[in-house]
Length: 448
Ligand SMILES: [Cu+2]
Image 1: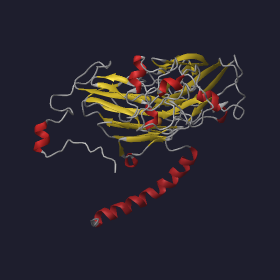
Image 2 (image 1 turned 90 degrees about the horizontal axis):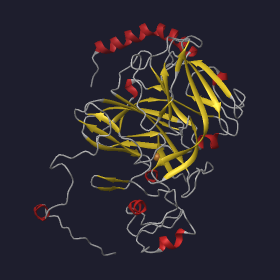
Image 3 (image 1 turned 180 degrees about the vertical axis):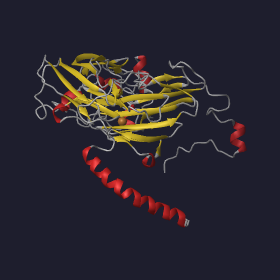
């Protein structure tokens, strides 16, 4: 289509007028990244108040780290230590966490706040806490041996800096990284904008993580590089993951953060499409956002999505890496699809505890059998375990939750299962329908 001359001239005039401004902006940009506020290091605003200056995020299954305010500074206290964490019924392991929250601690504050974070090292070895994505003085960056001496066991150190940006960021141990992060010393840090952009009615924060916990083992193994077997949302696997409950028509924001050992997680929503609005580098300009039903959340990154919850239902939201939907499934066993494996599981159980023999027709019954005690598995193991749903067994576990959209609700506890309106649910085809539409239901089992 031909662009009218008027418009073209308008663009040229605008370009000329902005040339001088652009030169000034370039100088400013060198001083501070585009998403930083005008607050320079050292300056702070009055502490942002929850419910007034910002709407706190909802962290399903997560642990919000509380703060107090003293002399205009927000004061947090993180204690790093070991504890027994329940991933879901049937699986407990000894992990490391911030304030007994492994891969599930959530901090939040407001752009312009000054924060002071005391860190008590309750581990047996040294540590340091890194502020991932933050613009801060180098000496506060929290890399053991590089920007500070590591914090010895038993000591309490302090970090203090102003928050000069807003965004969805993270924090994690940055010393003996593989072990300390692998055992759970990861968290999310949401910095709300001082002048709120478009508010979300429901603003969720979900931290993704992954673990190697051999069936029967009492501790995760941080040495595993590729065969991770437990995948968590704020420290839980489905069905222990609390649903995200939303009123139909509400604007929803979901902040995903990934501090997994090695995997990217493509997070997928059913029944809706979202727009990717933010990374841990800052807010994506409006024109750069695009619609998706699956957002890849790379390891070491955050992705924020926003959408309107237009459609009622129980909508699955899960990682689309198919192996991340099953817990502790042994992948070393042979592919037994098409092979009669009766009795083989019981024979191998004692000698190869984490080998789960595949079924001739697939794996879908395994979770139910494990839950009902029909299938022998080591204590403290939930291989293939999913959940009873309203219409039978849900065969997904791991990195799975539900977005439950309901019309007219005013409280946001779990509303139970959605009841599909009559005539809107998949069902067995009737003989009349098959004949009407000339569908042959005979199955050809011949092998060519
Ligand atoms: Cu995944």
